[in-house]
Every structure is written in C-alpha cells, then in structure tokens.
Length: 137
Image (cartoon, rainbow, N blue to C red; front, side, top):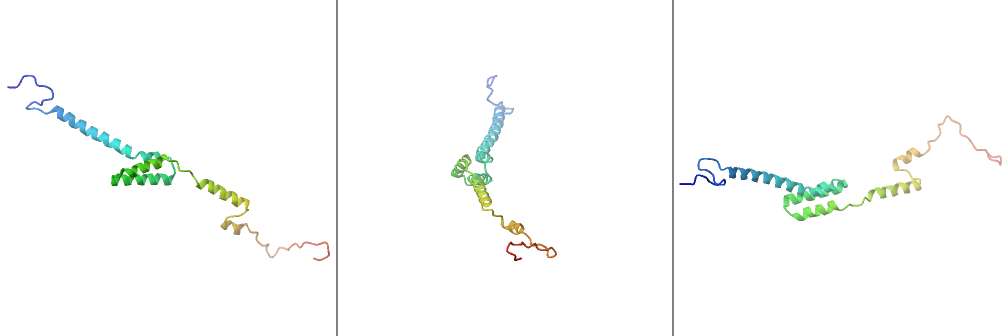
C-alpha cells in the first residue's frame, strides 16, 4: 500500500537505483580529480626546480621521491624550500678568474706547453751567427 507518487530518491522495487548510480559515478570522478590534484601538488617542487641548475633539480627530485615512499612530509617541505632558493653560481666566476690569471701569467695549459715551444731548425739549414763589433765571430 505505497503512495502512487514516490520521491525521486527512493528506488522503485522493480528498477535501478538511479541516485546510487549517479553518486557512484560522481565518487569515481571525484577520486580521479583528487588523485590528479594530489600528484600535481606533490610534483610542485620538481616543477619549480626544473628551471634551476641540474644538481639542485636532482636533489629536489630525490627529496620528492623519498617523501612519496616514506610518507614523511619533512622531505617534501625541504624539497620545496630548496626549489624556492636560488643557489648562486660559484663555478662561472671562479672559472673566469682562473682564465684571467692564466692569461696574466702568460701560462698555457699542460698539453699546449709542448706544442708552443719552438722546434729546432732542420740540420740542413745554415745557422745564422750574429757578428759582434769586437771582431769575434
């Protein structure tokens, strides 16, 4: 003895529960969306460090993997802080200073030192002797 008109949220006795199917699809879609959001948030430090130096990027990536597998969020925070910090480039100025000092000292690299030495004249060429003003040759 049920009423002739049932509310939409009650499933009919002989049919499919439409509300449960819609909510199931909504739940699956929400889980996929939240999973994608979680992965994008988790990879945020790596995406930020991608523009920096290679070593800094690799350290941030390793910290992200460690935090993913150990569930210790301190590694993710450390990776995020490292990605935010711009590490100064010490190598380029030091290399420039070394090149300038080498030019000042007129030094050459080790391999080029042997090539830069003058070779002795061939034996068939006469050797020029400088004449001095005092009569000695």
